[in-house]
Image 1 (cartoon, rainbow, N blue to C red):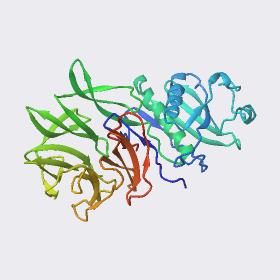
Image 2 (image 1 turned 45 degrees about the vertical axis):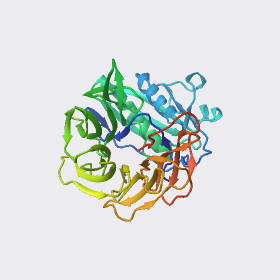
Image 3 (image 1 turned 90 degrees about the horizontal axis):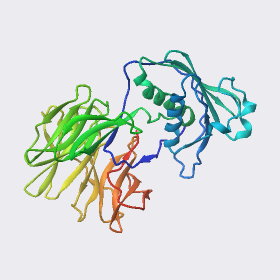
Image 4 (image 1 turned 30 degrees about the horizontal axis):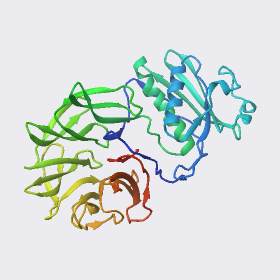
Length: 381
């Protein structure tokens, strides 16, 4: 089996969420191969050469698939002009072996917005994917293409792709700051209608139904939850003082946040309705930037209890606190890897913020960026 991914996306946006369904999209169960071509945990992995032929009857879909795979940084798509086999011809392994590609993807419209897509292993000539896709309207073409890219990614890596995920970020237009959502590639951008003088860190709930963020309203910092389906904002009554939202727990109901008053900062757990507030970490120091683990059993947070800001780990009830980062004097913005075995964070190096990744036991510290200022990292799902 392939190891868990260490692929990190350093995002200038605030978060990602997985979409589990889309109205009007239908997909048949695919026939997946048992062959895994690449291990994306390897830092020296070469880009895998693949060929995405223009889909017969709808080249727009194949172009989106090609863009998704290219943007992942793991694949190199063969130019159309270099392909010998015509799109209308059945797959023939002899047309591809001399071109250096590992996988060939073909697709064709069967009727309306219904299509069938196949993928072929060039090494042994096997068909490793055959699947039917359908969209009820033209505006669902992009989600359909992202679904195809996810299936190809899974065939090649053994892991779920990120191409059906969504971005949430704070944008500014005409002097107005507002929360926006878009597809992972920045397309189909939508304004939420939620605006304010200052908006911070929109974070998705694990089930993709809500956004959690901090905002300034009437000169007061508060925490809000945005219902994505209804596009309705709800204020979450919490505590007095300056409140900064953290992240949701896996149940998508409870979340962690930091609240400061009188010079100190403590960490709390609350449900999205604003009830059952629990203080889990309280100290004379500044404790902030909490992040719940994927399994909900632990919390990462930033504290100055050892001098400068460092990252600490605690149980979900605030127990068993221990320091995690020891390299560097200024470490902030921790985020969990999906598997819960690593964290990514920002560390000050030479007066600039850079992104690092490490194991929870403090080992295998690796610097990922070395240019400019890089902050607020997050793993891809």
